[in-house]
Length: 214
Image (cartoon, rainbow, N blue to C red; front, side, top):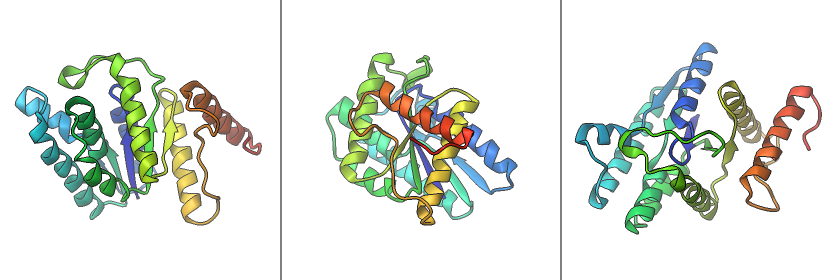
């Protein structure tokens, strides 16, 4: 099982990847977390990459995920090449990475997008500012929707966000096993994140109470 975590900056991808790994390891599963190559690159070079350097970083991210999948039952990718493609398009007007990034994204069992409901925090060279989060979130969702890639948005903090991610994993497993029809909890009538958040948490509360989902 390959799980992709996507989302704008400072939306908790790294924390969620670690929490998921700890939970699954506690269940006796073989789990590998693939860290963000872009963060490693920025720390090594002391700067953000230029336009011509984006593709190599995206390819290395994909290579590490594929290598981990050969040895672990579950791979959790703390970002994928799609995030690099999104930033390349936004910062440089370069959309050439999308084809490679989306082809790789289709190899994931489950794609989770982290919601914008946690506060923005500064974190070194990779943080552009809170004003960038909504445009990036929109570009990520638009790219996935264009490619027909199903994704789930997770909200909440701490244990709540972990519980929401585990619910998404359970739904994905049930769909693969034919136990649940294909569905999405993003709103059918609008793209308002607050509306989507209310719908998602309503599903979680109904499941916890043993009631049918709305």
